[in-house]
Length: 446
Image (cartoon, rainbow, N blue to C red; front, side, top):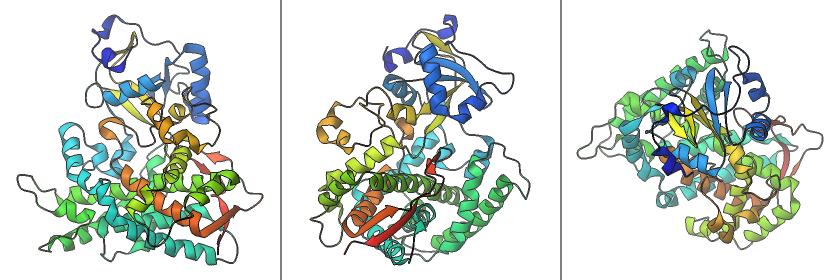
């Protein structure tokens, strides 16, 4: 049954609940789910099929697996599903930020921000990204020994995000970075306890410090008669017939944009560098793809090297930067002959989609999956690193251009190898990251 047909199905009140189990009182099946969500889903799929119910993370939950299910979930945004956030995340992100807005408010904010994230707009950011990336890569290459990639890449991605938002304005990068890391650590705690010594309590304090600083930056920019062509300028610029955003909304949006433009890009790029170090044949093909690269990078030059995109896409397919998200039903709804009651949670499992039957040998790192011929045959709902539907990642073009610039520079000018003996087993929550942080030796090729 197609997602569209099922969304228009008759009243679900007489339909049965999906098969499954609620598990233990209060806990449900949460411990099993947290131990390994992939193994949890695979076992129950074998037992119940692609639609089953459970009780995880304090909520009755229905798992819907397969490309059609993914499309049905994305199509339901604002109709029978909405985003689900914990109370802790709501407090840390802020009620005025894009992620927490619903309905027409959400669509209006996206319309305001979208022009600044179009693919064509990225043309002007390529030189800034290349300059920042080159400075950081040269510093890594000059280190006498090895270094840990993850924190180093976080610093680079954070500076790039700041350049997108604030353009040429001078900002206190170390101050913002320090408080940003404390703030993001609190977004993913299981219990949001606001005490000074808890991770969440420290995150709230860091948010206050960041907001105070960002508020001062916004106040200074509001005094200008003309705004520069950066993202803050876009938020401040008055548009005929539109209500200007409040300073509070602008500050919360800036905070969200720093988060959205940071950890996912770091995760994707670091894991791709790891995969390339582990697959020298693919690494060599990547080097050959950029062999003719001369002079400053441009958007047109990047587009002329499609193998870069194939590498990035396959890296995100094999190790998705975000494993999934959650929706919640806003009314009783029917899916595939079952009833999903109002208030039940519906996960969007990106990892499951990227390892599904649509992918031959899904555990293999094979960028050839994403050549033009294969892309044309791929079914929607099988590759969703940026989500989908009305909430598809607003910054996907920026992320792809940013990663393409970094990858092109790395392949052309640098070599890297893994330090032996490190722990490369993965921590999957909140972002897929090797426990060692990926220890590398990086040197200039020439």
